[in-house]
Length: 308
Image (cartoon, rainbow, N blue to C red):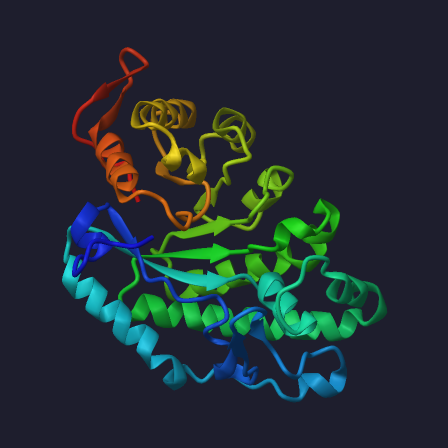
């Protein structure tokens, strides 16, 4: 989204939380997987890891190579002060492994899915290495100023649920355990694109918040997850192209369906290219004006702390 000249999103909208957006592939060179970004193909890894020989390129994550991420978090933390939470950002092991094994982006995931059967030991070793590296990277971000961490298993939804239980869930659960040891007070959010079939399984990872994408009905998601875990989302990003009254209605519907507590109002995915800034501003204005009234079970427009 193009912001007004010289104006940062934080200055324009003053949300309750700001995320340091660092691509999920950013840490790869720090543990032995260099990549290039090509204009048409996107990220390209010249030496995909598909064998025991390929695993030899991996090493412990060198956090000094990621100092720019830590410095950015410190600057952001200083800029927002106590007015907003600062969120860190990482990819889940399975999602990062799809790039490392496929050599870049893919629509079919056939190579890595085949490895689940043809070279499971190689894939498990790769995922275990990524798990430790990502956990270390999360702890580094927290120590650099992040209040909260979002784990994106963007391509976890490409797996059948029973395969996600085997090839993604255990590694996310291990990351949560490792981070809890060093940063027990840091909330962790988990998001999977296309997660309608995974909600109950996602809860089993031990995270604090489940991000719902826009294809999941918020009322259904809350019912399935229960009230002992928080939810995030899940306004359809395309709604920001609608007339503002329609956007207001959708925000109110999502908040009502999410219930009276444990909800972080957000989009169900990222802001789409070309989204009108007026609509983004309206999203924040409406969200901040809402407060759940437990006595009447209705929503009234007052000061609130709903929006990230």
